[in-house]
Amino acid sequence: GREAGHEVCGGSISGMFGFFFCEGPVRSFADATKSDTDKFARWHRGMLEEGVYLAPSQYEAGFTGLKHTEEDIDFTIAAAKRVMARI
Image 1 (tube, helix red, strand yellow):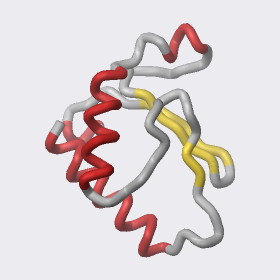
Image 2 (cartoon, rainbow, N blue to C red):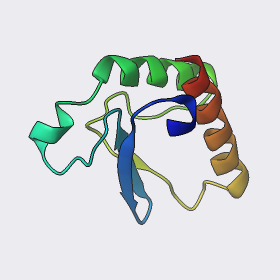
Image 3 (cartoon, rainbow, N blue to C red):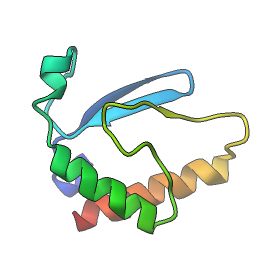
Image 4 (spheres, rainbow, N blue to C red):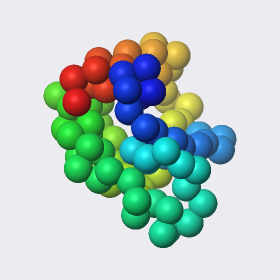
């Protein structure tokens, strides 16, 4: 995201992750409401077009599981970089 000029922050724990289009850090709901939800929506649509299905709201967590392979993760990262460059 930052490589493409976007303010983005997020975090993860175990297989759960999430992020926001804002400078961050996001420590509260009030912080989260300062993020760019329109940009998140454009990013989400772009990821769908790339074949990656994620939660449609930045307020939801994403999850990885044992069925996700290294190839799945690499595919998702590459798709995210392409979408970040487009939005």
